[in-house]
Image (cartoon, rainbow, N blue to C red):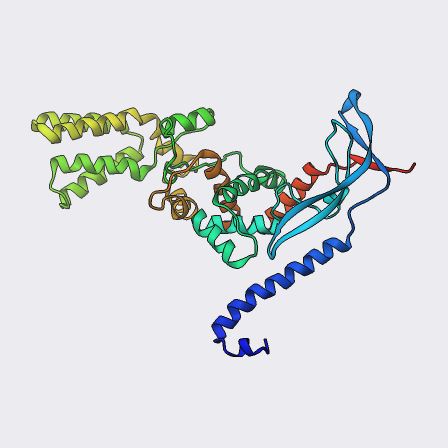
Length: 367
């Protein structure tokens, strides 16, 4: 900082240069810590549990050689030197990996967390560029996508273990709002209603009231001018009747009015499409019963959630998604928007370590 060269740089140029040098100092400190920990040598040999249940056996593995492993950290690449215990035909085991809690990937958990947050906030391309600019370990876009998919593995288990046991004041009704907004998939699938019924066969499927009223408005403009008071009154009367459970009578009345007025051409076709749609969905429009049971009949809440959770991230220009990547990112984004991501990441890290290094897998042997 006091060199002749440094004195000729602008403050901006100096801080950019110092950022890189400072990161290298941090990398060297991290490497020194790893070196000081040793290689994880726990003795001349270890016993490893193989199989399970009645087939469980303990296999002795001698210490063989030192294996190196590259680790991509916030500050750059460091090397872990680990004592490998193994035998011909057996997978090597490295006690140091468990001691320092190495993840399965070569990127540290903090690098993976930051990659996940970057992907939650914006496109993968922008996210990996941000990582490259702020850390010493760039990450490829494909790797970032894989990190997101793997990071969401424990999402369901995380929220399951946080559930509060049902008490006396807990109601028996679970309300789910479903909307087909959002993610443009690589391969389109079945209609939304069919998919919902397949996944949740016992639910009560309700047609969103504002969506039904849109069809009523389309019919109104076949009889009255757009924006007219007559059209507004016509829609109001039929909407109230629909809310009272008279959907079949409303459909019948619309058809009769069209016949009496002798509608032809586009207006006749509009009435046909509107009445077919309303009659086909009449079993999902029992609004009088839903209101009596205290069930929501409009999807405003889910549409707001879809915009915040889905549209703002997944509907950007040209984006196309595969199901695994979209589902993984949706879960992480949901946790992030719920202010649960930090807590979830700690849970996910703990679960990953449990999967990688199960308790009692090995033990040192004294010869």
